[in-house]
Length: 240
Image 1 (cartoon, rainbow, N blue to C red):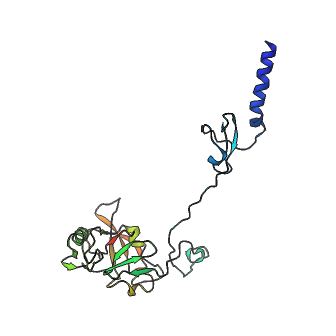
Image 2: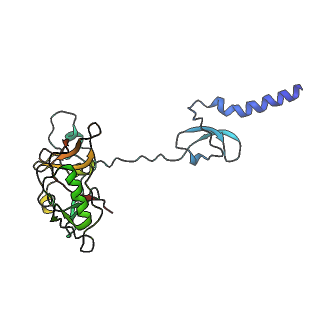
Image 3: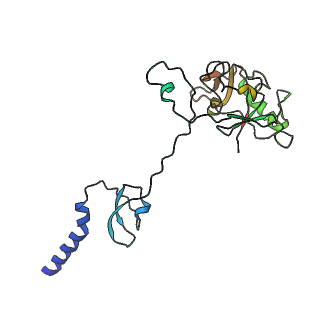
């Protein structure tokens, strides 16, 4: 009996020895038969290894860090020591920023979004009418009774146009410019851009009578407007 207890104690010490001598942090996740390549580099686990024995496993798998794809604001004027003009963070604009597709549409090479080339086909509209204008654009290629110019579908119009969300609309802006707040050289690609408010498709969560807009006359600031007010309509479709 004594010999049996002695052997059990010795086996216990052998099993516990690597644990008692390890001083780093442990992640108590049950992952049977893991390999060091299955675990993020630097993480140490007490698990069953590939041989079926329990022990410590320290990971060797590289940890991938996803870089932000948020674009630069293009602001260059500095008013305090710590601001965007100094840090200049974000993804730089593509060169060229836009591509004229020669079919009534323009591709933004930074975001991949495709915009209607004419930024003022329908005129100033209330929000509900703006949504209807886009429906008509998809149905017959017109907005508020006017041909929108889209010939990108083999000479006809596309059928997946929509009112942009507020982030898509804001992605067009360049805060270093004003009236309108678009990247320099935009006029070589777009026509009839208004230095005024443009509708997004987003309703204000805290007040459903309002929708988000982007003001192209004031450095591209984002704001809200009552849906009964009139703003301009600039359709977009997803790029490929």
